[in-house]
Image 1 (cartoon, rainbow, N blue to C red):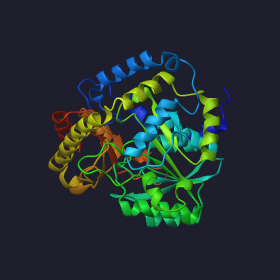
Image 2: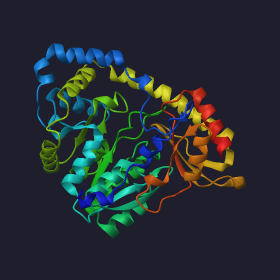
Image 3: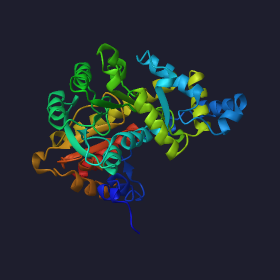
Image 4: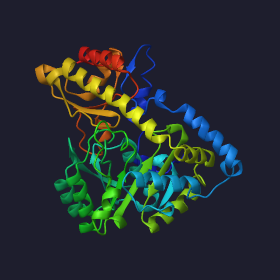
Length: 396
C-alpha cells in the first residue's frame, strides 16, 4: 500500500511495545500511565448515568453539538471557576474526546510541515508523535526539578519563533515536575513579549498531595495583560474520574476554537453525548471533591512508599525529586558504584526480575537522556511498590 508521507515522521509507541513484554505471571508493573481502576467512583458514575437517562434520555442518546453538550460545558466552566479561572464562560470551551484529541486538533489547526514547536524535554510521548505527524519540527526546552527552565525557554523562543509552546506545568508526564509561581508568570510574560501562543496541558493538576499547586496558567492569565489571548488550556476527567468516559476539554481564543470545532466535525462529529451527559450529572451531583480527596490520599501514600523504597534500596545509584502530585516518579541512574546507568538496559534486566517501568529516552524529542526512567506508583499498593523496588535493586 502507498501510505501518506506524514507517517514517515512517526513510529509505534515504545511504551505500547513494552506492554507486549508484560505477560509474564507475577510481574509488578510501574510502566502504566493510567489511574488505578479501584479508585473509580463506580456508584457515583452509575447514579450519574441513570440520571442522564432519566432526565434527558433524548439528548443523552442523540447526536449532539460538535462544541459539546451544553449542560456539561456549563459544569466544566463552573469546575474551572472553582480552581481560580473565574471568567470562563461555557462558550469559551469545547468538549473533546479526551484531552489527547485537543492535541490532535491543535496539530490540525496550527501546524504546517516545517513549523517549529517548543516542547519540554522530556514531555508526553503522544504529544511528540501527534505534532510530528503534522510535520512539526520539535524543539526541546530543558527542565529541572521545578519544570521548564524559563531563561532557556526565552532564548529558544527568541531564536526559533515557534508556532506555539507546549507545556505541562503541573505534575507533568513523565517528569512529575511542578512549575513554581514565579516561572508560571514568566511563561505568560514571554507569551506576551514574543507574541507566542502557549498551550497548557493540565490532566494532573487536581492530583496534588498536601498543599494545592500554584494556580494554572489559565487562572494566572488575569494578572498578565494580553496573555489570555495567547493561551490554550487543555483539561481532562480521565485521571480524576474515568479514562473510559473519554471526556476532555479545550479553552482557547475564539478564532482558534472555531477552527478546532470545524476540524472536530470532520473527525468524530462530537464526543459521545451519553458520556458527556453522565459527566455533567456527576459534576452536578457534587461528588467530585470527595472523590478527589480519596484519590489524593491513596496516591500520596503510594508516592511516599515509592520514594522511601527507592532511597532505601537503590541509594545513590538513582536520583529523583519526590513528587508532590500526579502519577509518576521521574528518575535518573547515576552509575554510582559501577551500577548500570542506561535506562534501556536496566528495563530489560528489570523485566527478567519481574518488574517493569518505562525507560526515559522516548520522552525526549531530541538528545534523549538514556539514563532516565519513569516509574508510575498509581496502580500498585504500598506493599507491591516495596516489593517491586526491591526487584529493581536486584536488577541494578
